[in-house]
Image 1 (cartoon, rainbow, N blue to C red):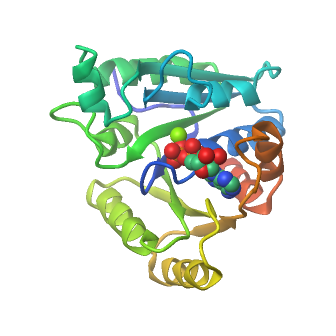
Image 2 (tube, rainbow, N blue to C red):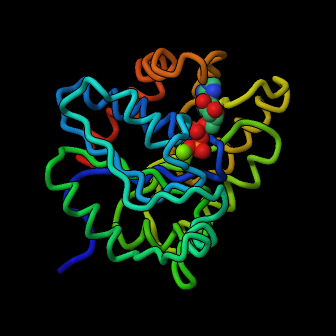
Length: 242
Ligand SMILES: Nc1ncnc2c1ncn2[C@@H]1O[C@H](COP(=O)(O)OP(=O)(O)O)[C@@H](O)[C@H]1O
Ligand SMILES: [Mg+2]
């Protein structure tokens, strides 16, 4: 059986953890759903997620789509320790089975018009002794949207991520810049300028900083879903039938 997904979709990867992958996944899911599409959101591996953790990615995603019948959120592995998946699985005396994730994504995708798969951390984060997030993206056969911060250090992180994906032969859908914090304006501007200048992939955004994102999660996601950056990604996906 071929491993790659037949359904349109993208893999939402980050230059790091805490760059806005979940925020973008939720906002993009909402934007696609508003076009009448059935959207499947897959967060295959989450760490640092105890069952009572209200701020877990899966919980936050499900909150956004709680009353929406055309969007499903699914998870395969969840570990309580807030460390890299390989180590979190070891602590739980489990082993992440990449084939099980591929099977789950394939089955899930059949029921949706679009699939959004959110990664875990950055692309070289280990899942097993032999596979990392980058291997998972390649095996899924999805183009990759890189979420990158606009703060100092992001030029390096973004270029490393782009190089890693290119070396693995993974198509890069684009780089989405996200103002996750109130970095000084001068640093934001120069980061955005350099990433635009030096990247051989479409650069989208920046997505604006939403001051009350965590306390008003659903409102924040709703606002971003209607922002031109997210609309542009949704439009690109529709046009390319991705
Ligand atoms: N545009 C934004 N405006 C305000 N806060 C943001 C924005 N993007 C992300 N955040 C916040 O930054 C933190 C990390 O975002 P998250 O989407 O969870 O990152 P990741 O999934 O990459 O780990 C969260 O607290 C989230 O609410
Ligand atoms: Mg996340």
